[in-house]
Every structure is written in structure tokens, then in C-alpha cells.
Length: 192
Ligand code: 5GP
Image 1: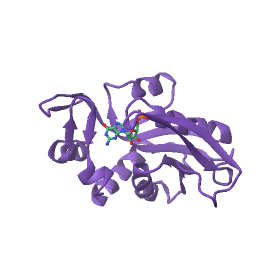
Image 2: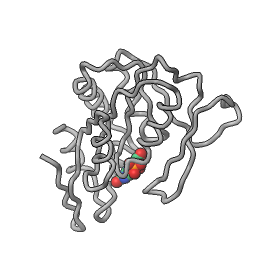
Image 3: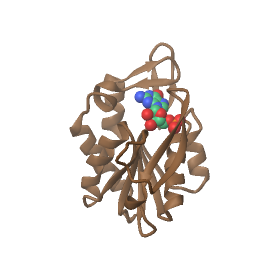
């Protein structure tokens, strides 16, 4: 998606060869016009796919998924919670995520009330690196008996393994921008 690639080139910063900082439009300050364009693009790419619910994960996935839902007939958005809150239902699906950026494992949970076997789920997230966040969300979909229809990602880092593994598993994956290389001098190279 050209708009997103240009935004990454103009306003993103490569922190070494591994981490892409996009705080000015995706992870801290949010560019809603861009989010709307991303939502439209997800809807175009998943045009013939029935989606009854979008599933994402705290924190940065929420805004992207919420805006994208407008283009999926305002379907509900459910997010995996990272911290057990006292008022959260005890009846929950849980799975574990290893965070590459934080280098620690944490649990996510979704109330059983909000995912059920009739649901057709699209997973959306901001970044795909080693695929651990998506894997944990897939596990929650599996526990719920819902059908996983695909995975939509804003920025995939193609030099890490998540994308390869998801595609190999047969799950449909659509990434709006795929970064294949980042260099110490700040150069960012996209696929195609
Ligand atoms: P994965 O689970 O695929 O290894 O990593 C995905 C999660 O880690 C994303 O939800 C995102 O929050 C974070 N992440 C991974 N790599 C990057 C990166 O280069 N930049 C930013 N801003 N977040 C990242």
C-alpha cells in the first residue's frame, strides 16, 4: 500500500536493523486518515471473505482494528487483554505471547462471551515480526471454536519469520507494507 510505505519512509525510523519506530503515526500519535485508508484496503483485500468479528491485541492493534471495522460493516472488535482486571469475567480463553520487543512472556485473555463457534474472525495487528502475537490470537480463536478467516497486518517485517510461518500454515495473510531490509544508516527497503 503506497500511502503506508510513503508514510514509513517519511516519518518512520529504523532503530538499527530490527526495530522500526512509527510512533508519529501508528504507535503513539495516530493518523486517522491513514487508518481509514488502511481499513478500506483491508476490506478490499478481504472482499470475498465473510467476517463477523475482528480480533486484535492490546495496545496498538486496537485503534487500527476499530477504524477497520467501519469497512467490515461495523462488525464488533474484540481485543486480547494483557492484564487480568478484577471485573473481567472468569470464563475466559487465554494464551501466551512472547514479546520480541519487550523480551518477556505474558498472558492474553478474551472473555468467552465475545467469541463463539458461529464467529468468522479476522485477526488484525499493527506489526508482524516473529508471529508470536498472531499465534496467541490464533490459539484463542481455536479455543473458541470460531473460524479463522485471515490475518491483516499493517507492517510486516519480512526478514523475521512470522509471515513465512503463517503463509506456510495455509492461513490467508495480507500485510499492507512488507519491510524486507533495514540498515544501520536508516535505509528501509520494501518487498516489490
Ligand atoms: P511478533 O509477535 O510478531 O514477534 O511481534 C509483533 C508485536 O511486537 C506487534 O504487536 C508490535 O507491538 C511489536 N513489534 C514487533 N516488531 C516491532 C517493530 O519493529 N516496531 C514496533 N513499533 N513494534 C514492533
